[in-house]
Image 1 (tube, rainbow, N blue to C red):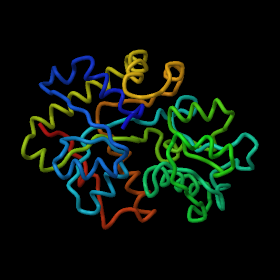
Image 2: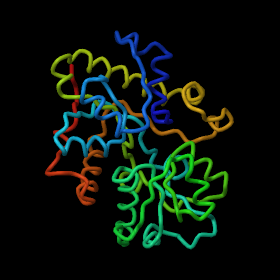
Image 3: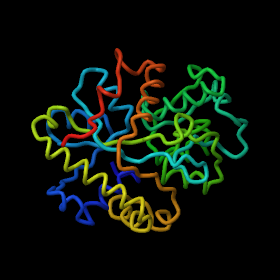
Image 4: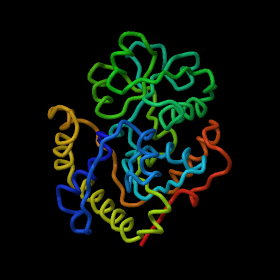
Length: 282
């Protein structure tokens, strides 16, 4: 997906990191995990990108999906984090619990977006079942809040910066409500591919780890690469908030997402991180 989170992938290709690991990468763009997950499990793609909750839900339903590398992670700092639930500056909403009886825009229902909102409401002593969620594309959310179509919206970059530019204010930072270092996106494959071609999967893991380290250490180059695969204007790429990129799957973060996904009834049966994390294929 053309999101900020995947910048290390594009940067790694540009820098020859994947080539150094013996990989030629062909990228296909999709709108979301709903399309990417079946494409990977059917063997159409070797690897896919998604939010972790989609992968956890798929695994709980018996699909062969394995988390193999991290995408973007929370910075753990309100001054730099890249995902928040936002409202108009004069809205009578000052805490997560105030969202009871209100409408909140999220890009996908029954996913990491609304589940993190629900967790924030729950932690604030509110009843998440009393929040009404409206599914809406990220680019439409700022206008929807301004026009009163919804009371609040969960925004990630670059739409978070757009909201801040319009004087919208954050009520809470979604990723940090779940975990200060939440792994908010991930790359995944299948257990079948890991068995059939462990060298391929291991090479991808190693290339992603090196690319993540490079992106984290070279923010200027990372911002520049955004202009090659997104429609974010150059003036925005220079100021938007970047995720933190790590070189290994954050197991503790996945455990937290399993906890809140279970509480929200998203998962079928019992699921553990051992069921969904491929630590090292090689």
